Image 1 (cartoon, one colour):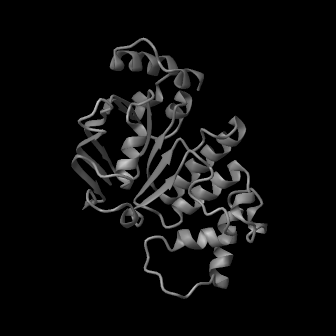
Image 2: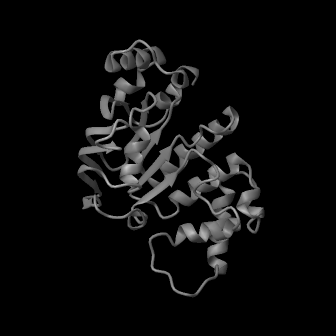
Length: 264
């Protein structure tokens, strides 16, 4: 479903601020894979997701989604393939628009649009049913502006919007990092349910080692723009946080995991 072949990306090349973010990165995700991604600060995790999403061009390499070469496609043309939830609950939705209007925009992602605008009765009923599944009472607030929702409500809504068209690939970029622990746990449980129900191929970045172990069927660790650990199946199920810390120290050549990983 996803193939990254020999991806390289350097920011500010040829200057004293040159930073190699992706270093000949290779990664293959099969249909239905749910892969959690961990690594220290600056390891290249978010850069990898941005490269997949087309937020910037890569220096070299090939990106394939479901067999289609999207390497040179601009970001808006990849929208038909991808769903994405960001770390910041303020991103991914239009705050001045109503809940039902945001859902309508998500439902039309990647489609040609004319001058006609409106939400049909059938669409509104469908949105209400899907909102009801979130168990947040949002089905009774369809005309509420999204900017008035809490962070957890917005992330739940963004998740629903990202999965609405059953994308080829779902990208979750530390999507619970800005939430309190209780809300984060609820959004993660919702993520699991949506991924399983729609059989979505998913990449989830997290700094929380426990979450990386307990979610998904595969775990990769990045360091210096490369994948240094790749575990799945029973091996992943047996992992513990001390195991991951030992792997991180071995792969990075350092005994110091960054504070964010330790505190998570």
